[in-house]
Every structure is written in structure tokens, then in C-alpha cells.
Length: 137
Image (cartoon, rainbow, N blue to C red; front, side, top):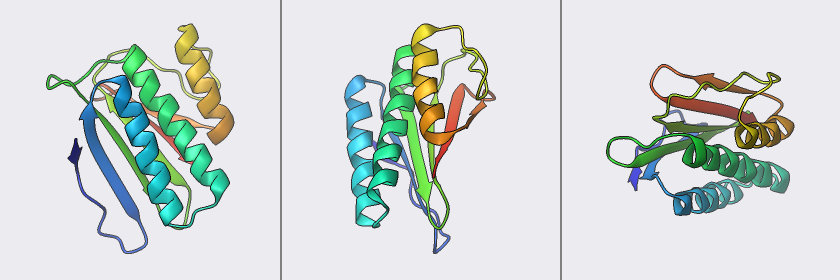
């Protein structure tokens, strides 16, 4: 695991982790985000939603994506006065639809449907693998 550090803005906490591309990393990241958000006294609903979203995005990456050449996956989150931003980055090349679009893979559609219900929307950046970001309010 590699910690890419925290943001320098005083009101924004930002964490980026590079984890092994394996299912155990999903649970590990989920525990870490939960502990950090709880320690920051975010509402229990926000903590639960952020844990769900991170698990869905990371699980989706493990199931449908690809690791870096080093066999890794990046997960990140940031929070402050606004919503919690959760991002997962893998090195796959699949195309993920934007919120509301019909997705072709059944498992992918299920995972993104859960994220959509919890967050309302998400974004996808395909410029370097697949980076999916969701805002938890």
C-alpha cells in the first residue's frame, strides 16, 4: 500500500492509496474510509454511504478493470465542508456510461446503479485507464 499524501488546504482532507489489485483491498479501503470519516465526525449516514460507494467502485474495478503494470489499484477520497468525493482508478479500457445511461455489462450496471442511487451521479475519465468519481452528500 502506498499513501499518496493529504491535501494542503486546511479545510480539505484528501487521501490517495495505491493498493494491491485484489479483493482484499476493497475491504481494506472500505474500513479505512469509514474510520477516517467517523473520526472526522461526519454523519453516520454519510459514512455508510461513502463506504458503500467506495466498495462498489473498487469492486467494479477489480471485477471489470485491469491493474497497473505493478498489479495495483488506486483509491482516493477527499472531504471538507462539502460532499465526500470518492475516486477509484484502474488501468482497464472498458467504456462506462455516464449517469442514467444503459450499461451493457450486467455486473457493471448493477454496481453503478447502486452508486447512482446513493450519489445521484458520477463521472468517468477514460484518459488514463478508467477513473470513476462519485460525490457522497
